[in-house]
Each structure stands twice: as C-alpha cells, then as structure tokens.
Length: 156
Image 1 (cartoon, rainbow, N blue to C red):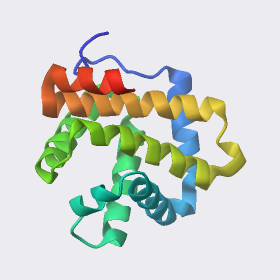
Image 2: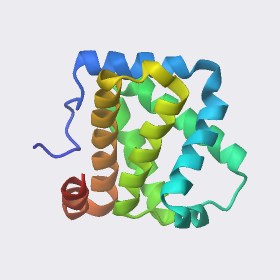
Image 3: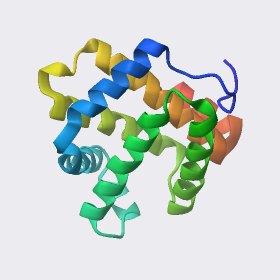
Image 4: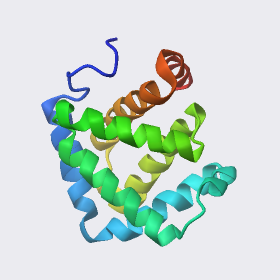
C-alpha cells in the first residue's frame, strides 16, 4: 500500500458518489447526526467524554460541518490532504490516540445507520468504511507516523 500522503484517491468514483449521496441524505438531520454520533461514541468508550470540555451541541455542529467539508473534497486529494493534516494535528493536541480512531469509525457507521435507516445498506456501509479508513490512516500517519498507521491497520 502506498503512503497515505500521496495524491491518489482512496475511493473509486462510484464509492465517492455513494458517500456523497448518503451524506446528502442526512439533510436536515445534520444537528441530530452529531448528537447521535457522540451518543454512540460515548456508549462505546465512555472515557472519551473527558476529551470534550466544551458545549456538546457546539461540538456536534463542528463535527458534522467538518464531515461535510471532508465529504465535499473526498474526490480531490490535493485539497483534502492538507485539511486532514491540520485536523490530525489538532486532534493530537486534544489527546487523541491511535486506538481512538477505531471507536470513532464505529460511532460514525452507527450514526449513519441510525439516521439513514433502511437506506444504510451493505454498499453504503462498505463505501463509508473504506472512506473512513482512508481518512483515519491519513490523519494517523500525519500525527503518529508509519508506526501509528500500522497499528491502526493491524486493529482494523
């Protein structure tokens, strides 16, 4: 596998379309999606609640806005990579560790499934899993180097 900092996209054109369409399906549910995401995350890993010191409504909005920005550029690696690098550095300062990325991925998929209901099918789940893994590995590589990326891959 190539280093995650290359300019090649980690999704096919079809997978990009699936991720984008399914994100658009959240539509007016964006605020609720953030709430569901954090409820799922803290149910999986209650100790992660301690990483969040501010207002969770504001945090939920920030998360869904950032997710929207990532989805909007998921086809455009030259634009996406600097965004992910910056996001990774901020999360490192917040105390995020490699193992947290797995829990975030599970919470993200659970949120999508809860919000989308029956529209969250195998094709959507696979596209989002691949998208999240590419995003996570890129962020981990930027924060923790090759060793961190290898740790994430071995736990996936």
